[in-house]
Length: 321
Image (cartoon, rainbow, N blue to C red):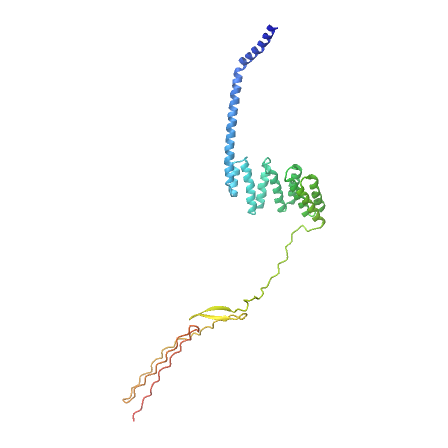
């Protein structure tokens, strides 16, 4: 028995050595190929990580639509490029370029189904289409969310939006069914159960679905001031040529205005009369009395216009005897 055991143990060992001798080169090549593959995989993974980090930095610094386009074109296929497409849609919508924004969202939903925000983007696309009046396409998107992504957190909200859309189109029976299905499809969503009940109550009350402008607010006329300080006259300081003159205006009386000062043209100097030969015994002419000095203008009253002085009287010549 001992000899048989030793022979049985030697046979497998001899077969293994023969297998190694026959396939040694193949095994070496397989080992080399496996090592090269591991190294290549590591390099590719490292390069993709570097590219993803670079794309993430570029997306973080994107502020305009042009920046988003640059990230999308340079880092195609990355999550950063998909996020840049979403940001581009938001920027276009804020700029009132609604058609371009919807096109950007459609491009996202056609290329980025594994993205974590895919279902939320579908819901946003349907809401924007509804706001633009394309209710048929919006209804198809809401139905897709409810049917294909029933376990997603956005599904009950899509069901509510579907009912709202049908109600706005006047399809009350279909809208009621959509609200009633909400309780059947999503029984664990208590907050949406109350929403569906409220909607059903509004439909039963036949509430309008379109907003109307409120009537204009009545004009409020200002009332006269009443109170302890209403009788106090208002003091106004009107500018005058000679300074500030205080004027008291009683309550309710029109404000007094300063009368304009008439402008008197300056007197022209009279041409002297022709000199006549004076008689030998003529008396010397009497000097004209000097005009009295005028009082200085008062600071409270405007100055009067200057009055030309009267010409000095002349003495007639005395005839000879």
